[in-house]
Image (cartoon, rainbow, N blue to C red; front, side, top):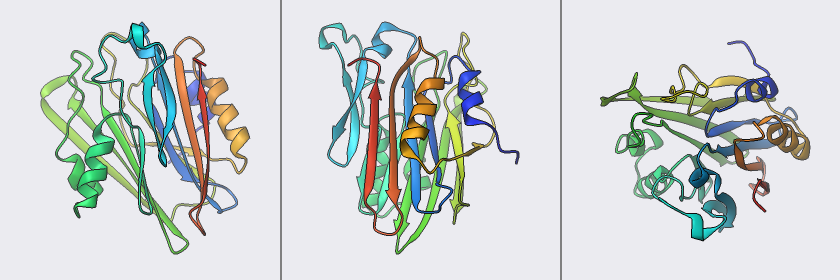
Length: 237
């Protein structure tokens, strides 16, 4: 698979929707993830990321303008022991709870499907990172309608054992802007990761569409000891 420029993937797409990046720093020290949200409506844009325990949640920037919280207020990131879960919806809680009961990432997501927001039927994208005894692996998933047909849910899981230094994968909800919005197609895109967290965060934020970007979360986890650093940027602040 050809490695793509993450900068160009963002800069040349005015509306990828919500996106997850997971990978490994070039120096091999860090498990890296990023999650961003975008919005076209006032309700979608009226959000910020806030810290919630070891994870984050979305909340309304101006509660008086919140119309429908059902698909926009959720916990995108939660941590369960040595596992970091990152998703674009309340399936974060599904994965967290069912893994705690002994299910796998893939089994947990078989209980869910795409979002009920026809005609877009926004895909549910999810990722999980596991760090144990100095080793690291991750998986990504997308649950999507069958080419816009909500009678069939297509589920895809991609697993990455012993990730290569400097490589990551990027999955997002929409191919591009449109009406209805076309769902992401294919495997997660192979993209480069940076050693410098500040530089990586800045690159992501600066290349997201200025009108549509809402919030960005970035975390670098030390693979040796599990400690981490987090960056959050909110357009509303």
